[in-house]
Length: 444
Ligand SMILES: C[S@@+](CC[C@H](N)C(=O)[O-])C[C@H]1O[C@@H](n2cnc3c(N)ncnc32)[C@H](O)[C@@H]1O
Image (cartoon, rainbow, N blue to C red; front, side, top):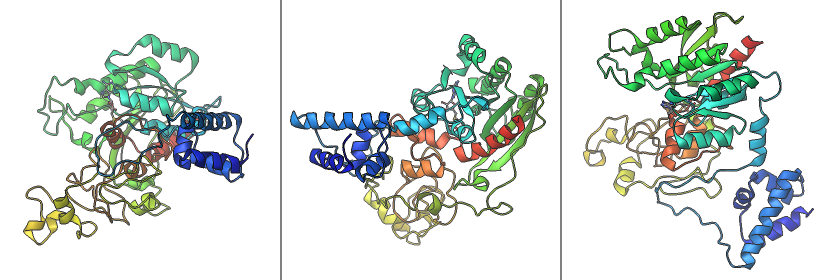
């Protein structure tokens, strides 16, 4: 056992910051900080990890093979692999959270990076398995849910034996997923043969195999206006096919901002209960925030005010997810004096306006309102409503993750583009947790 003071001076001898050292050791900065201040001595796995990392760094320095971590060169927007914030304490917490005997269980399909799954875990569910076709999303899911089994990649080709093997060991209470519906269209004239038209059916087939008591299907609000190639409403078709599988459903249109998510995000949740189970009809619970809610709406400021202030091209030294894309000088000029809630297209001087496009683009968010919907293009200043309220730049990955209510210790794997896509596509965990809490109550 070494004292906090010794740890600190040996770390400083190596020339590594507390944050970088914690990352090398695979523990949180809080663990290293508490130890160095002699406030708390870590438990054996973390203690071992820290001492091993320290010895390895000292040896590397002695042998001349140690290169102090480089700061991100400001301005580079080249995608690179995200170094995960590998905190064994948080991973262990994740592994056990909701996994107590008797806890309700959930499987997710079309799982993405796990926003929906994280919400169920927050509500006390054990996340037992998942299906997801994109490798980066699977890697992210595995990192954050080490206890969950990958039951398949493409839902159209899952191995039933794997699912049955899981079912032999655990009953699944809830199956949740958000099948993409791009194959349908508002006019109903889109490609009749688009294979994506049938993905919701694959979810139903999985439900027939797993027989969960509750089936949750999340989608964009536009689903309610989509027509199938025969002119019928897609949502009616989904409800009809669910009924034929023995599930009675409610259709819930919600805005995430009404449930404590600092973001305007309208979504539809179809919540279905198995007719032969003892659970009655389930609905999304009443609003918790905003008008008629008990708490005020959460704002961009609430979610991000503690983050390092960054301008275009700058990076936070202590948070690898918090760095700002460097934008061209002429775009910065257009935007510099644009007030909150306004767009560069609103500038009086035509020379200070983009040459084409709508005034939802190059637009500043407002500090004291929920953010606009976080999409997959939040890093692009030219896309819709992505300019920081105060700084002249698009949103960082950390800001988007916060606006989506991912906890800071959530690990994202993959290149930046893939990470942005996963975050923008996710169900905000906070929103999912509200529904999951309601389902948990009903399961008893
Ligand atoms: C809207 S995202 C879901 C986000 C997720 N619910 C969350 O909260 O993070 C839809 C996901 O479905 C996945 N997907 C699309 N087609 C699929 C298929 N055939 N089989 C499995 N996953 C698929 C996509 O890769 C994407 O990650």
